[in-house]
Length: 158
Image (spheres, one colour):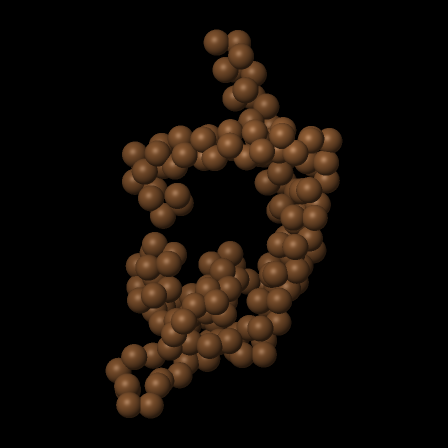
């Protein structure tokens, strides 16, 4: 049990410290101070999704259509996205980014690139075989965590 206890302890310390780094980093980005996680990721999906609408966004996020409606309403208010309809289909309402939305999208992309660059420094002491082994182990651990989340009814976090 001592080994499992040590694994649990170090795993928690690593995740907590990494989360702290992410939180501190996010505060340096204006778009993260001014927008919620859902808003920023909704912008990301709208940019990368074919014909994004409330239903598709809700399905992608695994949340209700009402939740997405609130997020998109706010994004429209801050002029990050706009609604549009296709000619010949006045029923469906779709979304696209405005210049403000594209700016948020690109800042978000830059933040992820900077995070990957920073994190790669943590793995630099490892050789390629160790990195491959770590990837396999973390996938296994993630699978176990995903199963636990499902048991708790938190499928949308998997």
